[in-house]
Length: 101
Image 1 (cartoon, rainbow, N blue to C red):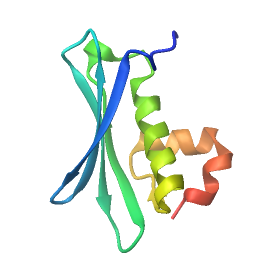
Image 2: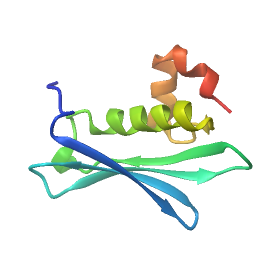
Image 3: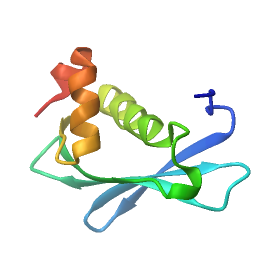
């Protein structure tokens, strides 16, 4: 897998029911996203991670999770990995265990 970080932009959007990280690649029209829902104070439930086939296999989903992790560290919230992809990433990265709610 090649490094896509130079071609990838991830923006965070607040919604009425939580938030969404949206990933865009410079040369593609398809976007991927990771949605989260609030649970109490300072806890976010990572509910869904979706990457369309058109941009799949390039590490987009992994970069979305990394952004969630970076924001959790910076903003001080915990994560419930309800999404199976996010849960699998937590299992592969034991150094993130302090962020589990």
